[in-house]
Amino acid sequence: MKSFKLVRKLSFLANISLIGVIAFSTQSCNDLLTENVVSRIGNDYINSAKGLNDATSAAYSTMRSWYGTERGMNLTIFGTDSYTNGADGSWKFMNTYTTDFDTRNGHVAEVWNDFYIGINTCNAIIERAPKTTGISEVIKKQRIAEAKFIRAHHYFILTQLFGGVDLRLTETLAPTKEVKRSTVALQYAQIIKDLTEALPDLENKARSADYGRVTRAGAEHLLGRVYLTKATSSAKAGDDYAKAIASLKNVTTNYGINLLPNFGDVHKQGNEANSEVIWSVQYTRDPLTNAGGNNSHVFFLMEYDVLPGMQRDTENGRPFKRYAPTNYTLDVVFKDRENDSRYKKTFKDTYLSNKPGTYNTSFDTSKPKLTFALGDTTIYLPGVELSVEERAKRNYQVLVPSRYDERIFPALSKHIDGGRVDRTQFEGGRDFIAFRLADTYLMLAEAQFFSGAVADAVNTYNIVRRRAAWPGKESAMLISASDLNVNFVMDERERELIGEQSRWFDLARWGNLIERVKLHNPKAAGNIKAHHILRPIPQLQIDRAAGTSSSFPQNPGY
Image (cartoon, rainbow, N blue to C red; front, side):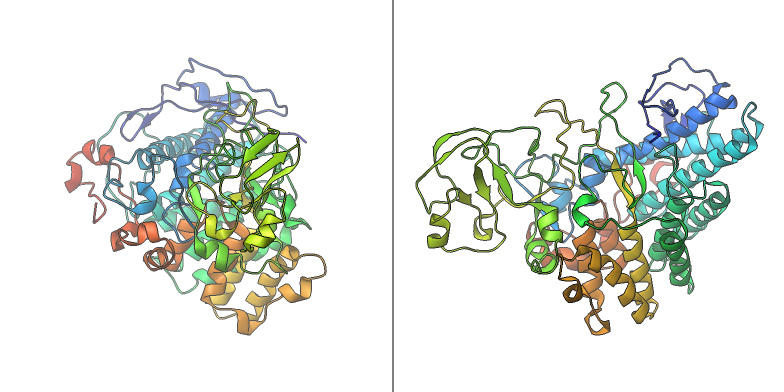
């Protein structure tokens, strides 16, 4: 398969960010997996055919600030109902909502800055492409459409995180302090305009042969999500759900995209470019071109590497133990394990010895010592309580729910990256699946449900649930209208999409972030307040604006 890959940031002196001179990310885009770093690019480079292609690749590279990064994960996984903080890490305040989560937050500033770099790059492409020579009109229009998709994507994320931001739609060529906050309504109007205008000129297919470029299917998926989110925002309109349904239906029917038969194969390593994927963010194994890499492999893992019979390896991962699942996740979302395969295929429940020997037991004291040969089971997580007598019969440690703590808990297996060069490498190389068909179906079903088309919603949910069933349990997995309510909508999204950078946005869209966190995240319940429905505007942005907070005010509560 031909592949479109991104490389690291290069200097492009013509482009200026909202708060000063930027480093413009530019990459090589070609049919092979070869990637070259280019430097000392002049102001007129983007006006050439190669420059336009490289500028588009540069815009794509800013997606790497969000997908598969610690900042993107902390802003979407932490502080929700499904995950709380584990033992390690200096960013726990992003889960607990203490006063340390303030306007100086580094993750917030990085996303803000990187996205505006991407937006300015898109603005340059959109303005300059019509005058570019040596490139066909079809490709020229496609690059403009890709830039509009990326700009819409970035403004959509920024709108959800911050509310009104600076809506800048022309290339910034010189440093400026003249910025102002727009409105959510104007931002949604522009996001929808960009995506609608992009659609006709994007490739009319599921996935580009130049893998990693967005196609019409990806833009329609995002447009459906935008309408679904707008429907509960301050900019809502009466036809938002209807428009979401139309866009999302197109994705499910017009492009030949199909759910994989086995849910467990969706995130199987080496299978990232599968038939369910609509669009993914590209990473690589080349340290020169991978920037910070896809880091999601480290955050969801338990501390297996100091337990009897185990040591850290690439297969089991580098366990940062940052995110621990809440009781709600384990006891409610994944309650049905007899019919639904997604618990077993989402969490790692077995560890095999890679450090043979005889050891005293640690958490499972139903036996005092255990001896392991290479490859023997050392740890098993049944997901339910077992009696001391039952655990004593097993020649390994059994980790039952009553023994879970901040260090040992069910580890999410979706992002594990066994392809790293060694057991300590942080910069993972797996592509991050950003849009996939099961999510399209779930958003479609949600829009149908909230617009009153309950029968249609039931049928759509059952498409996803049928795939998730254990063989022979398909009928038991199907729901009827009497099963469908708001709690089901919330639980089903997390059963399918847990750990895929969706949850905080989901709760914000439903308007129950505060309520759900107080109910299900004890470490955050005492501190979360109404203003946490938005993130703080980076203080550097306010300080560098003409008039500072009088012209670019901070979000309330920060």
